[in-house]
Image (cartoon, rainbow, N blue to C red; front, side, top):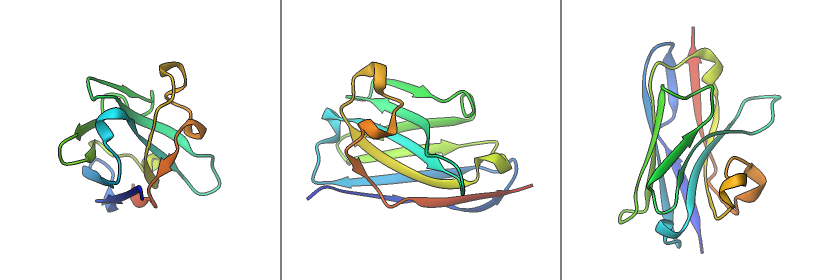
Length: 125
């Protein structure tokens, strides 16, 4: 049984940092793209970042590029998202996901098979 579980969310002020973690069980993540998505109330789920398999490359949305960094530890089956210079517009539920989409579709949420339950990030002005 595959399970993904995110931790590390919280309530912070603008300019602060948070580090999200995602622990995976039942899946050799080295064979999977590992991504972060987020969803704010009333909005669609959006792509944040991805570590492409086996972990050599990372891609980011324009809105977080330069502020967020994703990394992974394949041996520990862990995915991380370091979020710096947080802004109120970063407020959302953050999800980790795993899948094997083609690189051309790596930012599309519907291409990911496995999902965590999410962790809430709230940034106040």
